[in-house]
Length: 326
Image 1 (spheres, helix red, strand yellow):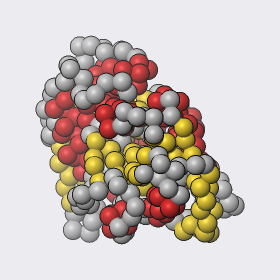
Image 2: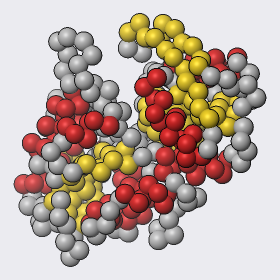
Image 3: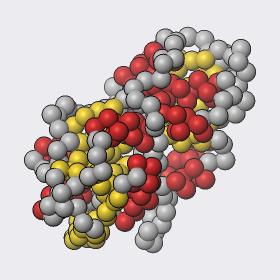
Image 4: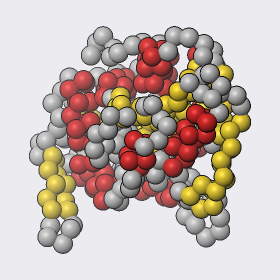
């Protein structure tokens, strides 16, 4: 997507992530765009921009969390921006919903994450900005540029500040996340272990085993999504039962469905560190939230100014706090 430095930039919020969008706009240095959603009595709704965006670069920030109204609201806002003659429309999706449906894992099921990519492109999106996709290949579902940000930009500085010794191990709650745990271990020169789990069906674990030695170690569980909390809490219990000093989890997207927060509070976890890609339903003394506002704002600034975001990962993971320019 080409953006001229003279183009006017707008940042708008969907209702699902309005607070985050407001902070992103503040970090970027512009006011949050004026928009409204008219609600009909039957549940139908109509978003509208309450200012002229003609010829401007429009960023629309909306996580596509349940209900699906949030996804449809994003699509409608993109369509409205196109019809209002925006020059470019960028969908900023901190949490890309339906990403767990990235392949056919059994007959007669959809690949929903691909279908949503098609819908966003058909609506008129020029570029996608998202964070910690459940599966990297989802980027290939788009025929438009995708800027993929990483939770490590938030978690690495936090880990460096919290732990200074070599008695730290990284852990994956399942085989699928072993690459993530291995990456953290390599960058921080620590070891990692894995939990092997077998699911009876979605959200139900049949069996879990620990692969590796965690005795006398501080263990950090890593994942992209915490939904019901069952996997993480069970893994934490097994790790502590095997002699770890402590166990905490660092997970980007806090879906936290149903009684997940209560499970975390009653678990062996010392702390759950998450990003604010999804608003918490309620606060918890065990849950610590790191904000993505400065990271997203910097990514948007680089998109507008034709700068690469590649070294954004390299600089932010070694830096504590917020970039000085913000």
